[in-house]
Length: 166
Image (cartoon, rainbow, N blue to C red):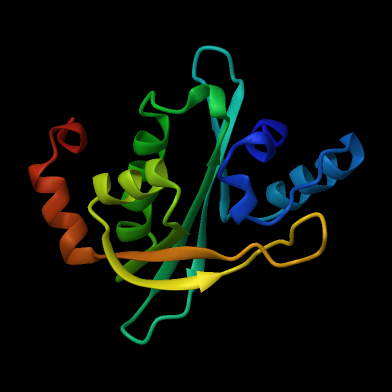
């Protein structure tokens, strides 16, 4: 999964992921050692197709979490990210008691921007960032967008969403 992500056009905006077997086993052990990363697996086969992270975030207005995700490129456009992120947001605003959830993505990553908007998140800001460098060591600058949704906004999305009413 990480190898396909690194080959995607959007990976250039993110931190470089390891691709060696031992390094990947270390990453998997790190994810498994905490409860903020959730594996998304196909129900029928158990195949890992992505992960969603929900980590505490700094926020002046109460308890906040940062939402992040990576999905295998072969499973994009099938609704898995929407379904998984909705479940995670239900958990954040339900049992975890979040007041707000934030997320960020590169402006050029249109599918990610659409996902965040589909989840009811609103664009809150724009910034220039750089997570990794080019082969010659120069930072790869990109325009990043920040998104957020409050508990009240999430509850309003839930009332109007037929997918969440099921």
